[in-house]
Length: 250
Image 1 (tube, rainbow, N blue to C red):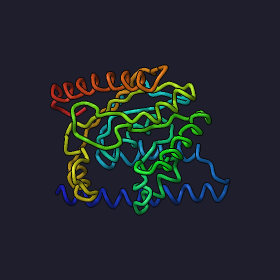
Image 2 (cartoon, one colour):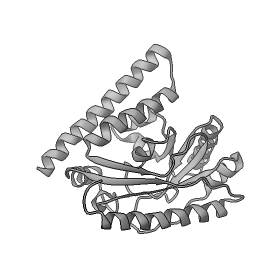
Image 3 (cartoon, rainbow, N blue to C red):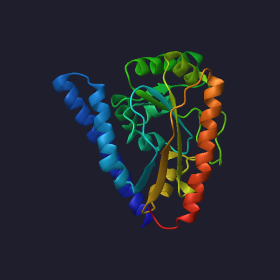
Image 4 (cartoon, one colour):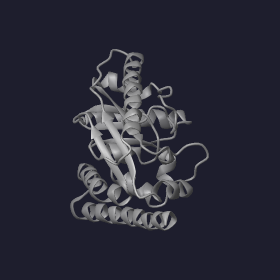
């Protein structure tokens, strides 16, 4: 049953990506490119159709930000940006490899995702320039400054580049703590997409929490990083405690 459920959900996931690309292309053909419209479509469809069909039961805590800001969180899985984007109408920053995923890469590119190849200095520089541009346009930018997914109880070191950009642009940094009830949802180690998808979405439900923190105003990247990590680490502990105390679903 779990394998059949995962297979059906994978087919739906593919169909969702195709439908999203087709809808965006039709809109662009009729009215010209409109990324703000694409962001809203992606948000609405992800919240209403994609996550519920995949069995993701999401709880939102705290106040999601609006307007230009840098949204930073700990990183567990490739679906983390989708969870945050259900509440934040912004541009996630993703690894360049995602752009090469069949269907998925095109779908996320056309609905407002910025890409970075972290091992290349020119790519990082271009990504920071793109972040600054979106902040100036009035949008939030969503990123995971650890640079990798992991199962650690606390955050790993944050890369400072985007924090410097946010401070230079005079926008706040909003910390986000997110976690899943079942650690099987984490995409870690040598996991590849299909085995992880079967393990994660073969279950009937996956419970997740996204907790938005208060905006941080800082004078330096070091100060902002310290404040963001402290807040996220504290609330990751609270999320795990809540999961252990709440054996039933949300």
